[in-house]
Length: 91
Image 1: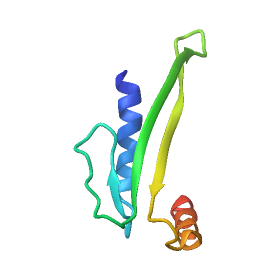
Image 2 (image 1 turned 30 degrees about the vertical axis):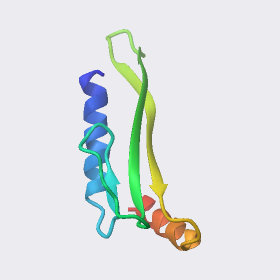
Image 3 (image 1 turned 90 degrees about the vertical axis):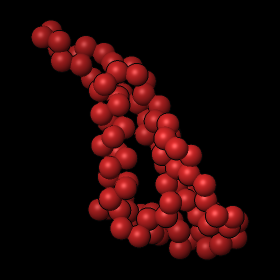
């Protein structure tokens, strides 16, 4: 993985880690998070794609996906969890 993709991953991890009231987070590639049974947590997944040169002077465009899965017990207020996630997205 190039340092650019690593730098992007660190930016997203720092932003997620800075959210107050967040559940535990299982960051990809780090020490595995061990959630308590029946608790919710987030799991990250970084899927870098390609780097392409977009200008004649060598500026590159980097693409990919940074995914955050919400892991929660079944039948435990999904609507409430989704509303809270939407609030995080507006920060």
